Length: 264
Image 1 (cartoon, rainbow, N blue to C red):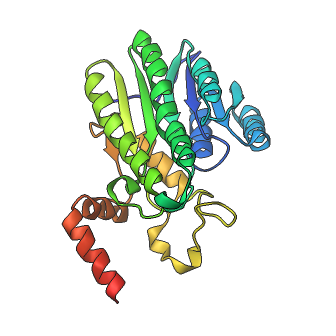
Image 2 (cartoon, helix red, strand yellow; image 1 turned 90 degrees about the vertical axis):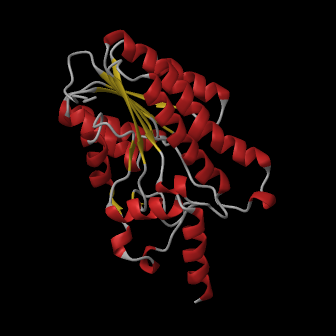
Image 3 (cartoon, helix red, strand yellow; image 1 turned 60 degrees about the horizontal axis):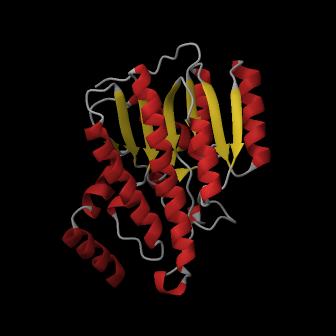
């Protein structure tokens, strides 16, 4: 089923985690296409600065929402913001990294991540899909990760919640088949978004990783929007990431390759 990105008057898109990275890139792309926007984020100053820039450049309507999706109250506020006529695109992008061995962390940290990555995405999709069905067209994009196929020592809930988003997206797409509402699970790998920058919990020293492993944020978002409704729910940008996902999906192969690397 194809999906036309072309907007009409009164058409809205909602993006969670929009103050930086993929979320900001989606917001800029959708504003350029003429959508009115609901932008969620935790960094109020960055979120408002983005909203001001988009309104000035594209003359579009932008509403902002600061809410903690790890809380019931924050999720409820986000759901209320999504429940509006004309909502045509929902991007469930909010997420974060919080490394640490499972047995050494308090369980509340894992439940909080599950609420942000999974519960918030499910509740937002539920209200958004109902609005989309009213108009016979819409798209839900769940930003997962190539990590969904990999075992993640030291980040057990991050990897597990991204795998859930994949399964949820595929099953939701089956429920919505033929309705005009499409679903995508976007599974990027290492990307220049700020997620791995110094000072962030998921910090990676980029000087110690090959440049060919990394993709640009705008390239990934353009790929996501271009592939909406192209028939495949799970979309993995980049050949390298597709190889990682394929290897990770074969546990015997993954264990053999990782084992060989560790012995060197």
